[in-house]
Each structure stands twice: as C-alpha cells, then as structure tokens.
Amino acid sequence: MKKLLILGGTGFVGRILTENLLKENYDVTLFNRGKRNPDIFPGAKKITGDRLTDDIKKIANDNWDTVIDFSCMFPDNLDEITDMLKRKAGRYIFVSTASVYPMDDAEFWKLPVSEDAPILHCMPEQRKDEDVLSTYGNKKAECERVLLGKPWLDSVIFRPGLIYGRYDPTDRFYYWLYKVKTQDKILIPDNGKDKCTNSYSEDFAQLINCAIDADKHNKVYNAVTQPAVSIKEYLDTASRLLDKHPMLINGTPEFLKKNKVEPWSDMPLWLGGMDLVLDYSKALRDFPVKYSSFEDSLNGCIDYHSSLNWPEPKYGLGAEREQELLEKLK
Image 1 (cartoon, rainbow, N blue to C red):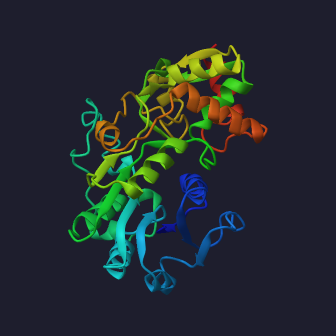
Image 2: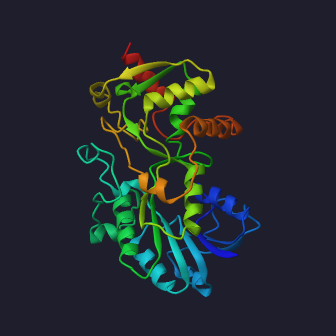
Image 3: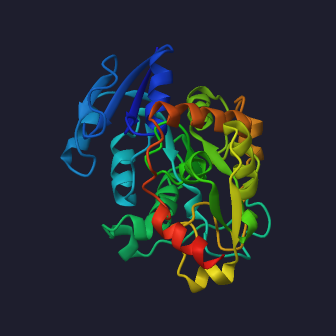
C-alpha cells in the first residue's frame, strides 16, 4: 500500500483528490493547519501544523511514496521541505498555476502556450514578499525552479488554468452560471468572444491521481482539461442546460473601460481582448485520464450549486452595479 502525504487536502481540488484516494488502496496522511473543514476525512491520518513554522519538521518523521503539495506559496519554504524529505519521498507532485506565464501579455498568448514557453521571473524581494496575491505567479514560477533545480528529486509540476467545479471557493466560474440561472438580462464583455482553457476540478483530481503511479513522466504539464471555451459558448451551453433564455447585452471594451469595469476581477473569464489558451497535449499523451466534456462538467456544476440553493456569488460585478451599466446601455 503506497503511503501518501498531502500538504493541504481539505479545500478544493485537494478535497476531491483525498475523497478519491481514500476509496482506493492508499495510506493517506494530511498535513495542514486544521482550519478548513477540519472534521472531514476521519479515515485519514492527520498531522496538524503550519508549514511556515517548525511544525513542518513533523513530516520528516516518516517516509512517503508520494508527496502532493497543494498549499505552497513561498519558494524558500519549498526548498526547505524538499531538502528535509531527501531520501524520504519517492515523488513530489506540485500544484503550480498557469499564472507563471505573463498573463497580461497579449502577444505571448497569440498561439496556444506550451510548457516550454518562458515563465515569470521572481525578484529577491518578491520571493519573500508576504503579500501572496500581488506576486502569486512570480512565487509559483520560482517554486518550479526550486524543484527543477534538484535533479535527485522525482517531481511532477502541474499548471492548471482557472479551476472550477465542486467545492470551488472563488465563484469566478460560477459568476456566469448564476447569472444565467437568475437573470433575464446579462451584461457580457466584447460579445463574449474571449476564450480560455480551464481545469474542471474532478478531472484535475484524476490527473493528479494518475501521476502518483505513472512510471514515466515529464517534469512540467499544463493541466487544463478541456478545449478552449468562449464566454459566449459558456453562456449558450448553460442556457440550454438550465432551460433559460436570458438576453445577452453587449458591453464594448470602450464602454467597459469608460465605466471602470475591469477584466477578470469585475467580469471573470474576460481577458480584455485576448485568449488564454494552453496546449495540454503532453498531459493527454502521458496520463490515461478520461476528461469530461464541457457540457458534462457544466452539468456537474449545476448539480453542485443546486445543492447549495444557488447562493449569490462573491466575485465579480454585483447585481446593482450591473443594472446601472445595463441602464446606461439602453
């Protein structure tokens, strides 16, 4: 029975993966602070601690076939942990992000981006900056370099796109699904033409699961799970599945800029006039995952959010602000 250590494992994709692994023939131990959903997984062993303190030394008291790291944000911490686990961990699976690529460079994204494309630099002050969000992509890129700089370490690095699905705490993908469910009119940016490749949480968990036992693998993978989908295609599919017929009201980039509507933060999946498409052919070739169709994944989201009674999303434009903008477009 393989012994697995999961750093995190009770939040989003980590929670789904842990659910799956506990149903299989694995010996699972979770290391985390015990703050998110502490009472789930009574069948798993648990080590409670903060990875940024001496608590992390507890994980070196055992040997692990595979370590799966969902929670790393600081390169120095990863450097310390991997050195601590030398000859104690058979494989290290690291959840990185597509944000290691330059997300605001339209020229960079003119073609689908493969794993050998350049990633962000990380300045010494960014490496130690405690403001995780402002330097998130830089830190994750440096974490990747830490792992790749250790040839003795059998590592697998996954770069997911926007992750959506069951247990998603961000509401970035749910924003549009909620609007289709609840509104007669929806403000969409630039005719909804911007496209993204995204990562469905159930499939991403399967991908990580496959990487535990893969005999041969590359070091770095784009971990999106479906072909690119535009906002308009998303809304059309959601409308059909929910049997809703909202009117889509276009906001031109000029109108949205004039009214201080920001790409992504105010309107998720809108990239301000560019597509964000990752080439994931390497993962398709190396791992036997049966990916869900976009329609099936959206049905999974509908079932999940129905079970929660369709709460108002925390992310993006609020209903009152959107109504103000729609009034201006009349």
